[in-house]
Length: 349
Ligand code: SAH
Image (cartoon, rainbow, N blue to C red; front, side):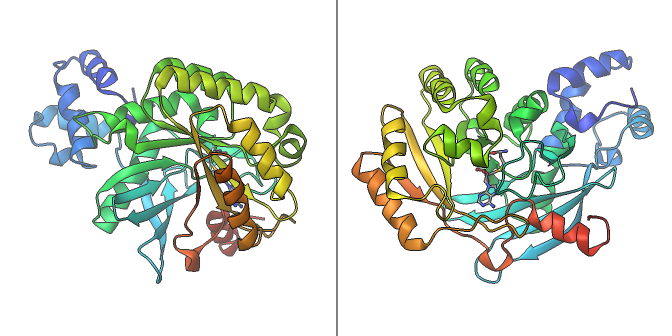
């Protein structure tokens, strides 16, 4: 029992655990509500549980999976970047962004990443380990606790490839969405993937209402393969076919993320080629000004090029937005904050 993380268990699993422990089944729901509804990390505060059960829980479990290590507050807007420490001392990063419609948390799904995208800092040292559902939820709860702001939207766009940690991601979504827990609606959750095609089919069949974001970043296989190793495993045709299936099944619009990299994927002909590939899909393109990573030679596109790219896509009927740069004064490309921190502490290379 000790090796199970109580904060990673769904209501059903908690009920089962209670039966295994010789307790009444409904205690599972109470514990779930304490951990995920009231965000309690101390069993002693779970006052409607019998004292004896609280002692047993204390002896076997720890709900405090994520603790605040460091934070960086933007002076320009209300963006806060967090570094959190996990129980095994790994460090992860999350971001809190405030919009007029609410507060959005960007969370990590893995420590490191094994996808190897050429422009991304999270993947430079490969995958260290998957995060558990409780560690993903813990990022949200710690952000809320520290900032005193309620999170209404979640983007799984921090370090890691969520579909490479598939079972834990599904559990996390079910936990965070549960009415007795944080009760964050599926439509307020966005999952971003570099495009693990088999998992996209699987996810479509789960019929969730989450928003799927695909990191496309290229108009064709040649360019995509140059910057994203996953493109050698799944061709763009296959990826877009899986996206059509997802749309057909869920009736949800897909977001395609496209980071504009100077002279690599930002030319006029690339915009036309992309528009042609996407025109039949219920989708939206989010153009991302690339964040330069010091270890890579890729650089961001000029703003005029980004605007021009958008104009072409729109002229072809593709809805397009340019991602706002929040917290630009504390900006560090995906995974860079953690990297710098580890380097500064003599931990990284
Ligand atoms: N692995 C998932 C989610 C994490 S990355 C994915 O690939 O979608 C979140 C987004 O940031 C992805 O679109 C990713 O391609 C993008 N990204 C990574 N490094 C970046 C950089 N240096 N500049 C701009 N976007 C970057």
